[in-house]
Image 1 (cartoon, rainbow, N blue to C red):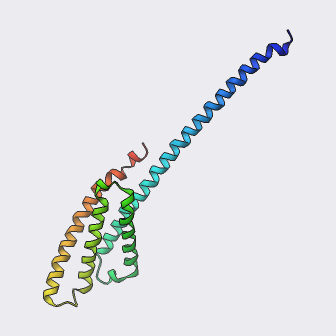
Image 2 (tube, rainbow, N blue to C red; image 1 turned 90 degrees about the vertical axis):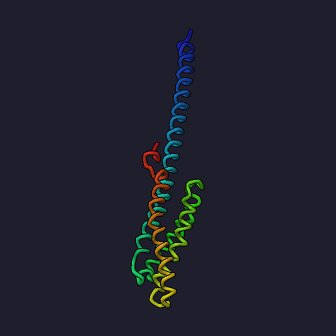
Image 3 (cartoon, helix red, strand yellow; image 1 turned 135 degrees about the vertical axis):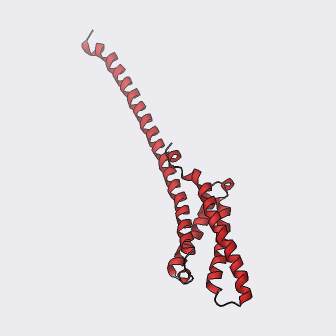
Length: 164
């Protein structure tokens, strides 16, 4: 028997083994890419969700400022970012979390706080008392809501779950 005839079954066997190895390697690479893609998606969601919390916190801090600061362009920019965060929250969080609804209530109460700070000096005394009462209620609501928001958003910002 010629040596080439004896070698051909071994060559065919090695080619088959090499094909299986290459196929297994391709499957392994695809699985790793899939896992990397899932982790990237989770991290992107984390970043977007955290941005909602950051914008709310920044707006809250600015809302506590003076009446003059509430008339500034910087405040208006923060307010627009907060409104954007509210709108984005509808798509980033489960409806059962209540985050979108809570942020909507915070938007409404922010208007009450702004109104009081803008018009308290101009209004008649009876109107000022009513504005102040509404202002106090809105401010109390915001103070309480920041804690509620932190609790509601915490499961979405648990970084350990993001990477698991």
